[in-house]
Image 1: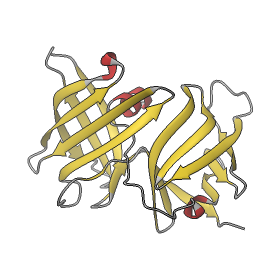
Image 2: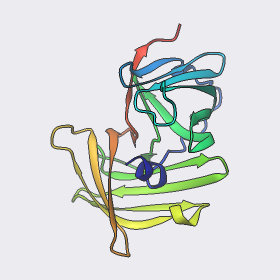
Image 3: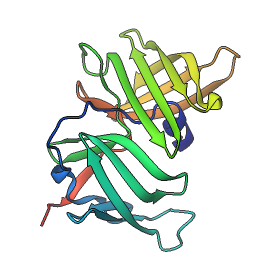
Amino acid sequence: MKQLMMSLIAAALVPACGGNTGEDLIGTWGDPSFLTITFHDDGTFDSFEADDPNEPDGLRSGTWEVDGHQLTTMGLTNEAQRWTVGYIVEDDTLMFETLLPDGPTDGVIGTWRGQSSRDAETEDETLELDDGGTGHVTVTATNPFDAVDADVSWHLDEFNPDLIRIAVERPDGESSDGVMFAIPDVALGGLPLRRAEPAP
């Protein structure tokens, strides 16, 4: 699932808006028993992931910076030293790897677009979700193995209406399944993190 999220429906490029310094990020987000990340106002962060296979104690630290609403971290993941993603803070919820509306939406129905980068590799994604449970995803990437141009089928989870289950149907007949989370009419993306502690 993590690879699908990274290579298929990665992060959104939120148009830069001057003056954003990332103050909305400062504080601690997540569940202390599972996953947390704390952004400090000096440009550093500390994170904890209970099931991190690469860090026995689950702890990581590094630096972060914001350009508009794009977040760049150094040291957050083994998959890339420098990782840039779109993010959104909506009330007390933080979401990374977001796709944002490109035109009108109705809940999760509509066209969603975004961009991300991992070191020198970039990806641009367009995801269309139709009201009949079908859609299409297009990913252009510097690494041709990450490129996608495929139909999808999707439905909302029976028990969590903010969870979208997506099946990607590739032209070669292969398929892959994944999930996305939704803030309806605002963003699609990765696991939402609730604010655990406010900024000092």
